[in-house]
Length: 218
Image (tube, rainbow, N blue to C red; front, top):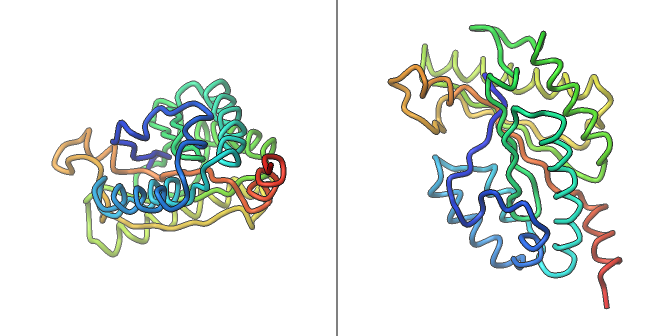
């Protein structure tokens, strides 16, 4: 399984700039998030969380600037990662080339995967004013119950590893969906590899939103 993301809409893809946060209001963001959530994959909750939670305006621009810098650090420190700025948050794709994967039927984080997550943990600690949404997915193989359980174990394993590196537990929300939200064709080897994933979103927490509002009022 790989840490990955879904970003298929050009309106929100590769928006690596502060204006993306400043240009979307809260009500509009929630509406856009609902549309994307219903049309990109099956119930794409990652994009729904990123777009639906924006506050927009000057405060959104303030948050966007902070997220731009964090995204740049991830791109620099983890070359294999594809980093997309979405709304006022960050969506990250890790593929097997980036060294994040699990052995067949296993959920332990080890080897190159641990090295990559160590780098990510270091960056997350540099930016403590963000929350992290982790969602586990897998390909269509074996029974649905087995896939769901393995998916849960891998999502929890990735979260627990980051916690062990000193990231505050209160920053995490972890969910899993088994084979219910594929992003590629499950009849091909390449497609199955893309579906074995954990999606990661980084969003502003309440403290950063409050700071943004105070710094930009007036």
